Amino acid sequence: MKTVSKGLDIIVRALKWIGMICMVAVMLVITIGVISRLLGTPILGSMEMAEIIHYVLIMCSFAYTQSLREHISIGLLVDRFSPHVQVVFDKISYLIGFTICMIISYVFIVAAFDANRTTLLLGFPHNVLKWIAFVGFMAWGMVNVQQLFAKPEKTEKGGLEDV
Image (cartoon, rainbow, N blue to C red; front, side, top):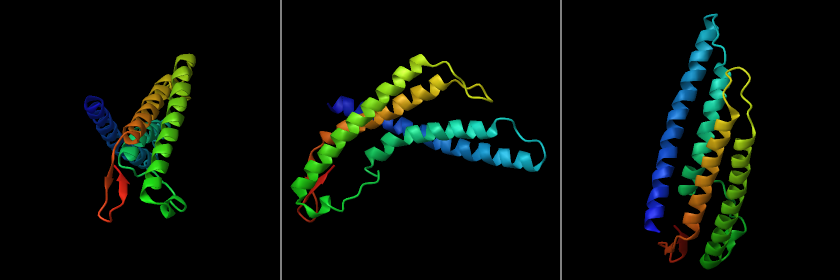
């Protein structure tokens, strides 16, 4: 299990770095596009390129954000329960998250084999984008599984915290 966990950590770190590179690339593409428009020679497809890179950034960020437990959650009701019940709710949410990610991954992988469309201006294949979405959601689901089977640890206050 530790080998699988280490492998998943490597994948999540790789996705994090790809996402950071994409963030810089989006900034550069938009900046260069705006400057070129101001100079009177717009770059054809700069907005489409920024959209594609932004898409990759988003798909790469899901698993990393989940690994840090930074996705938005509302604890209005759950925080009122005992720490043990809170851990149970966390485990249920990881299971639901895993299930949803696997369904979405399946949809994207089926769609990746089915379509032969491209983007309008640059002719970038949609299949590549669907494969990227598949990898992003699959990694996010695997991080949910990793957290599902993680052992809760005691906090300073004596309660349990799902680590």
